[in-house]
Image (tube, rainbow, N blue to C red; front, side):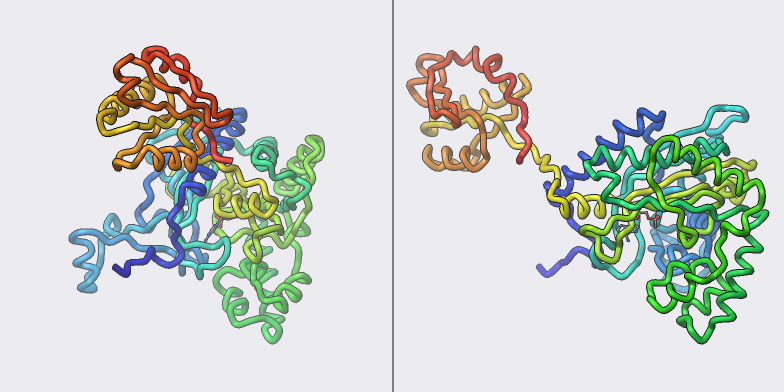
Length: 441
Ligand code: AMP
C-alpha cells in the first residue's frame, strides 16, 4: 500500500489529539466565564456563504477553497454543466461566515435580546502551500459575539483572548498583541482609494501581485511578505488618520478600556486582516518563538456588515479565531507541551491460561468501578505481561493464578514499592477505585 495522507493534512497522534482536547478544555473554562457557549456549524456550506461573507477578492476565497462535489452534482461538474447554488459547496476555510449564516437562518438574534456569545472548535480547510504552521486542514478555536456594537464588547473579547493564552501557559510578555481600526462603510472607501492611489504611484517598486491588488483588494498589499513591498507600504497612508468621527471614538474607547484593564498592546496601522468582512476594531496576536514565518497565533475583529451582507437586518458582530497547531508549536518552543495521553493505572496479569477468563471478568468489574485497567489479550507469558505492565507505567499489577482463584483472592503488587499483598477479590474494586487513568508525563 502506498497511500499517503493528502498534502498539508496531519494524522493527529494521541499526544497531539489529547493536547488539542486540553486546549479546548481551557477554552471552555475561560470562555464560559465571559458567557460564551459552544456552537457547531457544518464542515461545508454553500460556496456562496464564503464568497459573499469573506469576499471573492480575498486569497481565502479566490484561491484557497476546497470544493465539495457529491452525487449528481459531481457528474454535472465532470461534464462541465452548470451547478445550482445549493449544489456548489465548499469546505469551510474559517468559522465566522458559517456562524453568521446559522444565526440568520435560525433567527437566533431577537430584537433587543442580549448579545449572542458563541464559540466553536474544529477543522478548517485552505488550499495553501504547506509549511511549518500552515496546513491545508488545520484546527481553529473561535468565538463570535453577535448583536452588540459597543466598544466594551471589543475590549472584552480581546481581554478574553489574552486570558485564554495565559490559561494555556503562554504569558502575555512572550507575545505581541496588535490592534487597529479598519474604519467602516463611512470612512473605509476613501481610505481604500488612498491606498490604491499610493500603490499606483509606486508600481515600479512593488511586486506584480501588489500592483494587481490595487484594483482588487488594495489593503491586502500590507500583508505582502516581500520585504521591499513591506518597506514601501510602511509609508502608505495610515487608516487611523482617516477614520470618521464615530470610528475614531469607538477605537479610542476600546483602547481606553484595554489600558484600564492593564492589557499591553501595540497599535499597528498596517494590520488590515485578510478578510473583507472586518470593520472597525481588528486585532492579532503574534509570537516569534517556534512559529517561524507563520507567527500569528490568532486574531479577529468586528464585522458589523456581515449579517446584512447575507440579507439580514443590520447586526453588529465580532470575533476571533486561533490556530491549535500554532498554539502547540508555541507551547513546544517554550517546552511546556501538556502531555495528556491517558495511561492505565492497573494491569491484570494471568499466571496461566486457566486464569484468563477470571482476569477478563475482573478487568470488567474494576473498569465498571471507575479504574483504568489493561490486561493481556495475546497469551503472553507472565514475564512478558509484567514487562508490558512496566512499559505501560501502571501503578498496580493484580496477579491471578490457580492459588488465587482457589482462595478467591488476588496478589496485588505495587509497581512503585514492589511490595505484594494478598487481597480478597471483592475488596479490589474499592481498594483500586482511586486508580483512574494517569496522565502521561
Ligand atoms: P485567520 O482565520 O486567517 O485569521 O487565522 C486565524 C488563525 O488560524 C491564525 O492566526 C492561525 O493560528 C490559524 N491558521 C490560519 N490559517 C492556517 C493554516 N493554513 N494552517 C494552520 N493554521 C492556520
